[in-house]
Length: 330
Image (cartoon, rainbow, N blue to C red; front, side):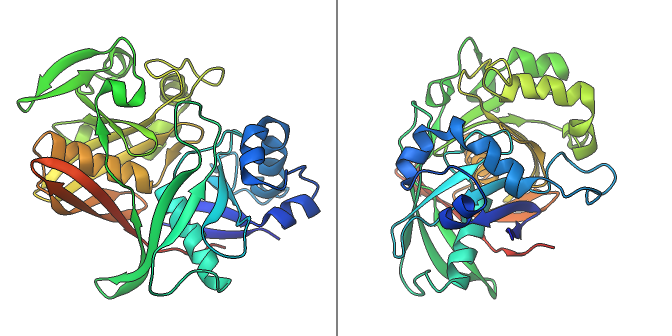
């Protein structure tokens, strides 16, 4: 039986490679080969482990009971290989909430080191990104809560960092940002976007009013959902414009110093209650345009608040860390 976990409203199922094979998924024995051949097994894995049982889905539920599937570990000691499978059968390069959940699963299995860093290696098939993509995780506390700090490394900014094409360069808050025509066509308030690469690609749209943040029901509604899917998803699921490999979409509004409200629409999944890497990208974009300073930043999403730590050196953002906890989901 699949074990599901919840991290800030983001739900993932966790299965071992052995369990996947026992349930009929033709999964190769190495994570690297599995990533290269994901078209032969990923859809079957999503159906086997993420689908609602007959009559189980509540009214208005999404097509799957989780936001994705984590398969691993492929070893008995660190570094640990894993696969992050989106519900459309594609593989993600990184997921902050997913890696938090995977860390919790490792902890429950007695595999997570208690007082030192643990390296997680995510294998994927995006030819434009490094695979495996490593994330260093440490079990630790924050404000009296036990969880995990994820070191997401150094962010990159701008259209080139995410492979965006044919976007206009504009000025926002005296900083250079981008204008994504397809987003502005949906809402004139969505005219200023900051591209961020934090191991995976993000497009953070900066809005001046809270009312310009799209709600979860709005993003689920057919008209907007279809338009955002065309922008966020790579072909053939979407148009791959402006990013041929797809891009995660966020909207951010500065509530007060050090606190940013955000909404998320993920490539490969759609609207989500929260996302760890999306929250980290939002914090980085807010720093880039002068909304926040380096140090602790809170990113508030419908699923919960993500504590982010931005580390600056010589005027550049050198490292981003994300704190998270996970609990067993029903």
